Image (cartoon, rainbow, N blue to C red; front, top):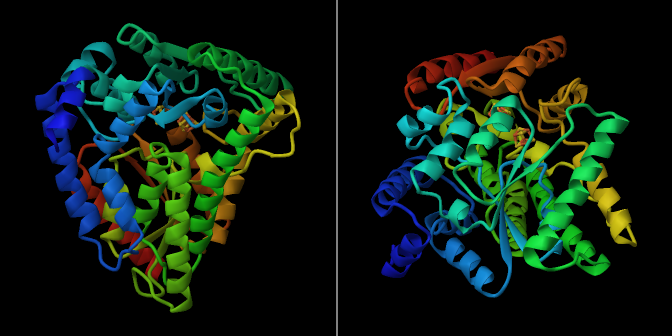
Length: 426
Ligand code: SF4
Ligand code: SF4
């Protein structure tokens, strides 16, 4: 990394030594997990570049945007509407983290039995290694699961720009009214932050920009229906992860470019794995960068992942926002309609999620489902049991995994996953 980046990180207040260590580990993992894959689409070169510059060029771009008067909003959840941030002259970036860091320090603030995702977010703050977090003018927390809700109370003492969004837990009329009120409150807060009032034109343009991103991902997902699979689950997951960081228009163009290439591969019956390789749908907790543990093990065990029922995946990108609204109020209503359909496990009851898992298994012709639950994540671990039962009724094999970010259980997971893949072959 260039000296210019080092001074940029220093100005952001990063701990350079710890940050070097993180980038070293990340680089090695990327080499081992991603660059060692065979038959990757050429278009993945763009995502390799993005990852190599994830703390470099992209941060410089964000700082340049700030210098030009835009604001940066950081978010930990797919319920924070990117459309509203964009329309108010702000850029939204994901802050969810997929690696353990500064765990000892974190456990002075949070109980040990907190999920890895929340601990990681704290570790990146306490360890001073996340340039996205340090670039953000506003950090949005949300009242989703109990772990996050209470953790934000502590995060509020570590950062001075935390904004907490309340969220419904029931899909009722009252729930919708709460979401609507919270999205209007968020709109006012972002407008205040940026000094820009959201107009009909700016909101329409923002809706179109975010829809284009989602459409590109929908196109990519649909191409994964093919057998042989034209792209690995690891690479498709990476595109879904970069969704949260990249410049939206450039991201859309890059995903569409890969899709053009995959269409040609499908025509030529060219795949990353042989035809009839067992096909797996992953369902459950979000897999934030650089959490590549499960797909690495699954695809190293003779199976291919064909879809992610996850917030870093189809739960996060499913459904477009209607572009037909003619006023800011109509478009805000369309945004509420779109996000109110997100079937996070914090909702009760949450039957839509079960239906979506079955639909996805059928659409992507999955032979089996692996339910991925992070340890101590009550919403998803609780839902894993009805998910498994519903799939059993449809004769779809399901393996429930409960894990964290460490590699300590990698051997044990591999054994279980290999046995599951053998079962699917049978
Ligand atoms: S799993 Fe729920 S809380 Fe987590 S990002 Fe998705 S919607 Fe938000
Ligand atoms: S993984 Fe589960 S416990 Fe962790 S933040 Fe998400 S919903 Fe909450």
